[in-house]
Image (cartoon, rainbow, N blue to C red; front, side, top):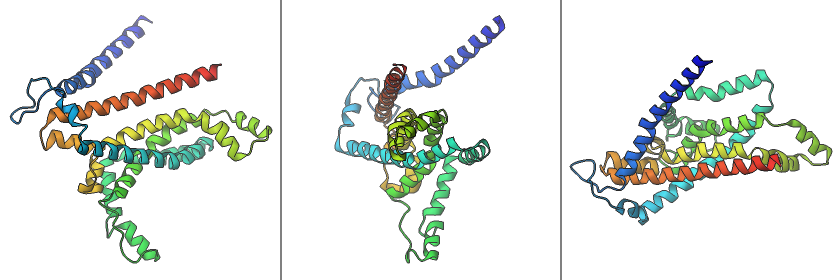
Length: 284
């Protein structure tokens, strides 16, 4: 027993040290840099300023923020619409089919998302797989301009982030008590009413968890807008990348990163409060 406690304490100490150095300390450095002045000769000037945050209220950055929220929100909605039926079917399948479907869901993780995004370029380009297939079927007569559009960015984001919506939903729906559905049917509820009044409310924690896992990366995956959207798609991830690597304005890039982290923190707190309130209601 003492050996187990020592091993547990050692493991916790290692993990805490790792997170403290590479997560907490790194974030504190970014937070500190966000209040400094930019300098062309070094990373930043040691002069306190709030101008990096006030700059974010200019029309250019407000447009980028709203566009990022719009695309991330639309991506999250599409992932819910596509992922919920798949997760529901997956949760109700027998173990043999369930294992196969889970394998098909996890297989994309075996390949880098960057490589999969390059594959989407081959599919969506003017003479790509999709246009040739539609022309062959006679649905269109001229290639569609899909690549380097917001539509292509949306397709790439949904394709890459859909598993992050399905897995939390599946984990939630798998624990669902089917006796509740039988009780609703016995009380005269139809399929639609059973879904809206029983299944959907009880699966909200999975929807919220999946939405957080999809919404935040959708705003920060800078290489997908770069590859599929070109210069037309400037999201928060691209904006942060440009500030650090192109304009070398580390304080402004840090301010954007801190703001995005604050948004993430607010969403996590909202999810925690929602889960806490729901747990209290279930207890009562």
